[in-house]
Length: 176
Image (cartoon, rainbow, N blue to C red; front, side):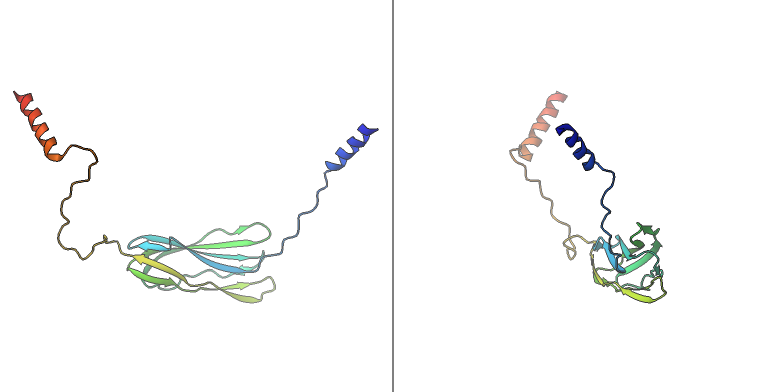
């Protein structure tokens, strides 16, 4: 009797029916800008990625980069393939920029138009992002004369004059 009851409990615990996953709320349309790296040196290339997340069935107008950004050259823009998992759709636009002038600048806020399934239009606005462009010059840019020659600090090594004298003595001994 105990074995039969244990077998019934085991079968009940291993039933094929599982509780349905909790229903996820559809995401609200959102847009965000990510800049990698946020600090550049002159001539460096950075990637500005604009990501727009919407529920399925929404239309998103193509993301257009700003016509010009201070201290940066806009190299190119590429719309990446749509990613969808049934609950949300993710659209990414990758914009490459190159630093041309040192100083702080700002990637401007972008306005992106989104239409829902019913055709109602909505504008998503991204936040402006700070970008620092650093100089490619060495730490002492005002110096005009060369730096003086310094010997490396040697720990427990033979002084240079002693090493030179020993090398000269070994050379004379080899020639003799």
